[in-house]
Length: 80
Image (cartoon, rainbow, N blue to C red):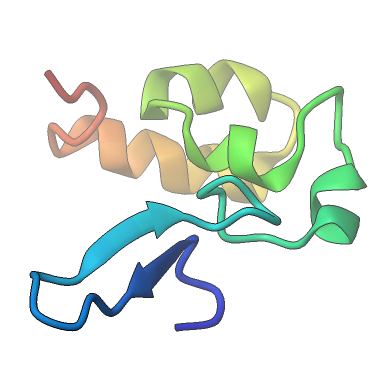
């Protein structure tokens, strides 16, 4: 499935095998999108951040910071 980050290989008489995409290495974005950076991070790296990490990263952007603070306030800030 395009954009999933993984490729499913059908095995004739065995269960299907799922492997990371060779192009994106499981990050779900093409090379061109991953080359775009904001403050030294690409989209895949930003989406891997915890809410707490993202709060400090986006501290100077109020529209994003407010939404992240809401997530933190309802207990979605730290995942174990």
